[in-house]
Image 1 (tube, each protein chain N blue to C red):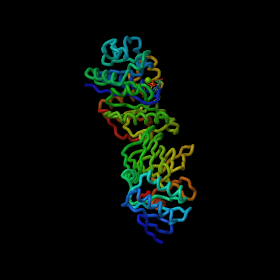
Image 2: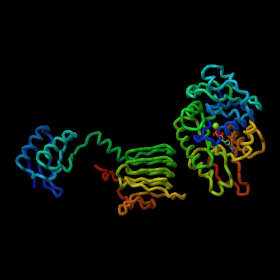
Image 3: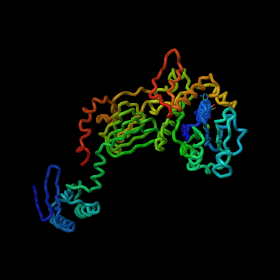
Image 4: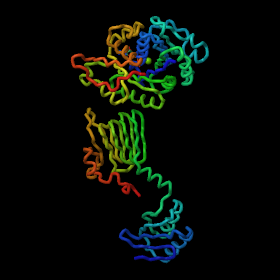
Length: 223
Length: 264
Ligand SMILES: Nc1ncnc2c1ncn2[C@@H]1O[C@H](COP(=O)(O)OP(=O)(O)O)[C@@H](O)[C@H]1O
Ligand SMILES: [Mg+2]
């Protein structure tokens, strides 16, 4: 079902109704048209729709206005705003999130390294050091400190190291710490959240490809 | 033009002052002109280890405050003409001493000495910053204990921001049987964790305590293990490549030296 009005195109899809808003007219014209269509009951009340703004970028205030109109006046929920375009700022932060940050440095006791995206440390992470990344963390060296990957909610991220003997590994909201007795540590391992148990587990590095086949696939990362 | 080396550690009581006194003595034994600066304001004790406390008239704070000339505050060692000490103040206001103040003192001393050794207080606050400000190079002292290595690591991280020419490691108070039993960190593991070049190792040795007690640094005696350790360090600072002293003759040497370079 597709229905086109002056500035609105409504499409019924398997995911529900998507309302495409014209991207050439003024925002006021859009609001007016939306208002008119709602008055004429083009959309059933108490449904949830997606709003697609095509090549128009709405700021949060404009989104609020549309939400106000639909929600408060006509009890229509908005699942999400979609668009073909993003702001430079969003693009930057997305770019930041998907790029690998190489660091040639030993992270020492008391030092903290926080980055957006993946971190590639060429050096050691010593006891008492903390590394936090929104993406995954790869250590070409000895990992003995604390690493938090997928901060705050990237449960698919991993921590990999040439030598793995961390005091703590955190991924998203999970935490796993070294036992109280001394352990030897191991070569070439990675830590990940096992989806079945929801817990952090360690595995041999050559299984990484099997367990996280899309690790470096940027389209997986929220665009 | 001399070079200045700060002796630091983060943790207290690991042997900074002892190391400063003994490297200074060992360098003086090699006829080098050496000035030791005690920057541990309020906790002066480099002078005691050297047995020079009775000769102090002015101190570093007097110099910085302009109460006396720099030359007047320098105490000459009783054994070597070429070894001098600029003592810390025992009382007085620590805030008088600034990084710029120390830096300018060191610059004034450099033309007259081959080496200026700066004994750093414990901690990572103002006293540390003062001591490091005047240094071209650093020596980090640690014992083979986890907490001490952890603090050394912290300090090395801070020193990396200082643009020093080099940072070297001294591992002090090694007890062979404890290392063998795994009750202390092994030299290898410490060097691997801290990943800086090893300048030398010093055994835990009663003679060190005895010598300090008598105000006569152990490096002055020819025959103890600790004194050989300090003398070797001095020779490495002078650019000689001296193999690490074995502390276990029958087993041969238990660790490979990474790079045996002197400070030059
Ligand atoms: N190699 C050693 N063997 C035995 N005792 C030592 C040794 N090195 C230092 N000490 C002792 O340890 C204590 C602390 O040394 P000190 O040089 O004052 O440390 P810091 O200046 O780092 O606080 C002193 O009592 C000293 O005699
Ligand atoms: Mg001291």
